[in-house]
Image (cartoon, rainbow, N blue to C red; front, side, top):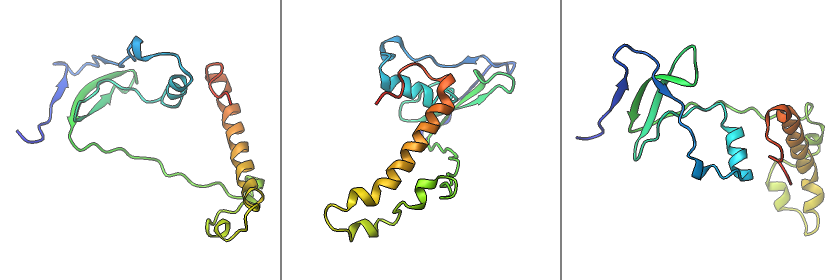
Length: 144
């Protein structure tokens, strides 16, 4: 057989598949594990394929349950487009060097000053993200 597809459902179409839990031995509680749990907390995994992807059809009334699991040999995923912020929204970006041709022409010792506004804008964005998710994140998730 070449690229078979397996589909699993309940005979009555009920939502019988539950969210897959991370095995205890893999859940070390390390900062990286906690960060991954926070980043992907909205993604629900029902099964893991080996050499193949698994697509789940979630129940409409309960995201933690699925009504169908099917294998996909060539999986696809729609990624939301990211729009860069306008420099007016993030003031440090107004002075940031975004064209990498410019730093290439700089003399030694001028890199830090040229790239500092970009670093400041990024640090401000990180701070805003931390504040945005503060109520939802475990303690110590973003330690520096």
